[in-house]
Image (tube, helix red, strand yellow):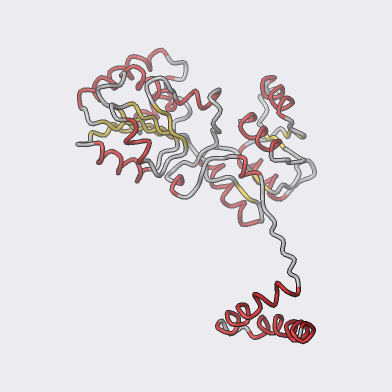
Length: 297
């Protein structure tokens, strides 16, 4: 998270980058996080997490600065807290809550690979959701058998099992039916491992990030392939993009109109203002045009 948020913040020119991270029981933050923060240009570290961090950053406290934008994924409570923060003048990246993964795969895919991808998301938390969509019932059965085998070796087996219990395998009749389902669901992460990957890549409209082929695991996006990993969940990919450089910037527009320029567009302004019944808007132009036009006569 430090890398995928602090690096674009620095590239975008943010002068202050505040990192909030909950300390361990000894009141310390992991050395790996501290090193990454220093490497990526974090200017302040606050030992706090969860909705407490969102509240502190929104309103400011004696030790936590009030900020303009709050970015980063969190659990369902953090997601709601971020949404509430927007009522108090703070911008957020998007609603980015419990992790999701949807895999569309057919008989051309490797069942053990697909099972490992599903489990990689399931171990995030008990409220994570993973979905397998396939045109092959045989393949679905193979993946489920692989999941049952692989899950036994996971240190976070209990967490992964609870997430798997809340997840689905969905059999569809065609690629067209699968794509309609996927676009309606709008997965945070979307893995495509089929005979016709281009069909899905060209047709996907709602997803946070797409992983193509048998050798593009979702965990590559988490750590090393270069795409940002703060992504919309819970169907919000229909309205939001994942974090990118633009997320850290804002734009100001400027205009400086000459006498000739106002003469050229003034009549259009007057007509539209009058049509809206906004006489003062029209007058602000008319009063200037009266001075400009005689001066050029």
